[in-house]
Length: 92
Image 1 (spheres, rainbow, N blue to C red):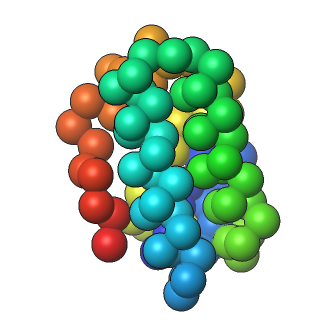
Image 2: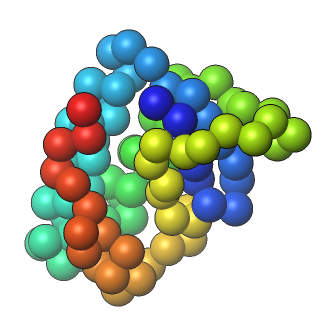
């Protein structure tokens, strides 16, 4: 799966990392529903860290369509609520 983090670039994530991403992503959606900015920030940070650490960075010169686009790391809870309004719970 190709994942873009806005303002950073694209990463290729495969295998068990996708299962972990799906779990962390569900936690992120739960945090959005809860409405606690601190919890949202922590959960979003976990998702971004997984993509950065377990994904393979795709060179900026390569043109590859993204399967999933994550907002910029400094996205607020309020902004995320709008961005994730139609976001699917199950990524896989």
